[in-house]
Structure formats: C-alpha cells, structure tokens
Length: 195
Image (cartoon, rainbow, N blue to C red; front, side, top):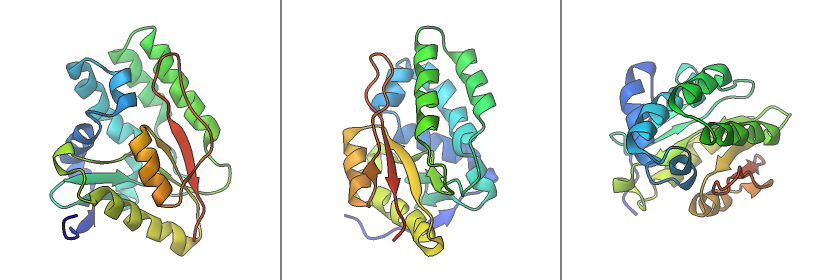
C-alpha cells in the first residue's frame, strides 16, 4: 500500500476530470459493462451519468478526489437525491430494448432498497485501474464515513462486484439483498450503521 495521498473536495470546475476518472474506475465493472458493453456507448453514457447520478455532491462539498484524480467518490448528504428524470432520458438516448428495460429495472430495484431514515448515499466511488490495489478506495471510504460517524448517520450504497462487496464489508457495511435484471451480474445493496 502506498503512503496516504491527500483527499480534497471536488468542485463543478473539476467535472470533466472527475467524470473521466470515474469512467476509468468503472471501465471493468461487471454491471456497468453489462449495461454498456460497447466502448463508445459506455463512454457516451457513463461520463454524463456520473454527474446526473451523484453530481449534487459537488454542491455539498462531498465529492472527493484522492491524489491527482487517482480515485474519486460521491457522497450525497441526507435528503439529497440523484437526478432520476435526466438519468432516464440519458439511458433512452443511448440505449435500446431489451437492455434499456434491464438497466431501468436495476435502478428501480436500487431505489427500493434505499433506507427511509436520513442517510448518506454513495452513488459512485472508484479508483482508476492503474492505481487500484494501493488502498486509495479505502482512504476515500474512511474519509466519507468519518462524517457519517460524526453526525451519527447511516451510509448506503450498491456494490457492483464481489470484490467491492468484500471491501465494503470490511468497512462495516452489510448486505440487504440482491439486485439483478435478466442476465445482469448481481448488485448488492449495502447499509452501514454509524459508529
């Protein structure tokens, strides 16, 4: 594991680099690449999805960058929701059936697992594959969880791979169920109570 890198809040002026870093981080993600197997379709859909899904974190000082965009994380504070309408429009512009219906089904199921009590939501957190295995994802996770513990708020996310699920379990998250649509890889909604 490398020595700790600085973590700083990202702003809207960082949007392009932030989207690119997240797109790199998810370029080998099982669920993302099931949804968008074509590389151009993936880039054209996933990059704008990053800001639609968790971009409100920029406005709340809870989008984080580690190092020189080696990793990025979005934390939506209690009561702040993703832009669902524009996300649906993005999918419809870039996808066709039957995959479109499958992806929309995944997002509907995701919404069904969100806690009803106030909580922090982590839409996306990821590390560029070039920098994975150095502990940067754990550093980003600990950074955000410190606020959850300080404010005594739970944290919620969806793990999109078995490896991510194990990482999140090490940080105190527990699996609430399984999300799947057709032949999609499984996703795991996960909750962590404050410490």
